[in-house]
Length: 144
Length: 464
Image (cartoon, rainbow over all chains, first blue to last red; front, side, top):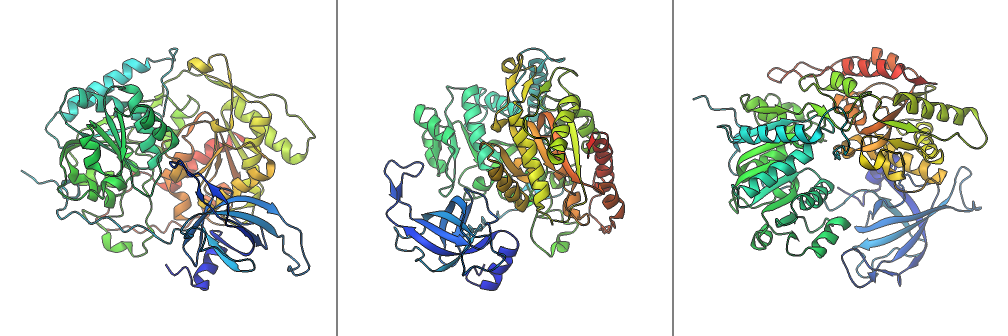
């Protein structure tokens, strides 16, 4: 799917599966020990400011749509309304931990960048190869 | 997952399970290539699968026995429980590289390295000596053809599988045991042009078991007859609405289970008076139907989400305790968040409920899930987003009988359903335009009829 196509992402935003925000701050030094590992690895933290409360709950997996970086929502807190906000806005700060695809902290949004975070997997696995022979379950019973 | 009663209810769980297990084994050794077990909700299906697995392995009929389940969580659960049942038999959990194992399985494999093996490669598990290998069907589907052919295969939760998945896995064993709950739902397709599969004997979009039975109407079928999960207040209703061909009863007697709530604390507002009235209704009769005014907040209406969250939240604030035939519940047990589940029809509703719970500051741990994903699981109390609530008009998706069936059959004690005013009217207004397709089987259930019967039941427990 064309995750870099803003028109397609607009549909995802309307359907409540994605949200758009401005990157406010990043912490590329942050490290965490992931399940199954013994040593900590880099998990950059990104704080994104959104105009409305994101439709996804804490712990949701989100993909930074344009860069195929996988993250997880860690915290959602209301933010102060500011003069540059639209009148109907209820801004929130969303903390996202980047878990995969960030190239050891090199592929991380920069402060001020607009980013779309979507609860979709842009890398779906390919389907298994179909069996060469149609299995017996899928063929009508042979009449003796 | 149903835990056997420690004290006798009305029937002996152990005796019934033993008889079922022997009967199924006899059927499996008959001439047919596959045996089908139809199990109503909470009938001890997983225990039966584990029992048969241990019989096949101890009788050495199958050097390696593959078990296919539908989800990773089910595979992890099956691994842990199977090891508890037969701690000396080496078992393997085959998993994909992208999907982490649950903490319970990782810990088990670390604690018992000689009997619990995990790997992403089947040959490794077989070399390690695993006698039973457990994986989701989607993992078995990637097995290269001809790598291995087994004597037996067990497919658990077979009614959650679509025919295209069975196409990939049916060939891995000579003979199969399909066990599942025919009231559950197979994953739906997002394809738009499905008409071309109409009447095809290998239609990829139909539930797998429907296709197997249609192609092979003579396969032996065993039906489990008692639900150890559903209380007597739910079993006849669920059986009558959704299981015309697998009638069942509750394994426990009326009055065996009960729920108690402390008095509500804090200021009373009209809204939370309704919440508390619904909770009291559920404690008294095991059911409550909380009817909200006709809402128009769309499919993920925040009012409905907030009501469901508040019901679960106040179950905890009112220190709910349950008593049952189970040993650890005989003298009452305080409910924790993990005993509760909020069940919705779609993912946007899940997100709306989770946000509402965050806003209430409810302790974490309550399961919030769609009906499709919560299949096979069991909770003390469930809170149900009626599939027609918040809908402007009924749709084929919201009327799917299996979806409502899953929602109405996850609880051991009570179910609280939240709906919106005009449920009966939206059923009356539904223009049934389901086309009659030549060559397609007649569905077993009429969705509107089932919804009517369930709605009539809900109206008897209405709080508004």
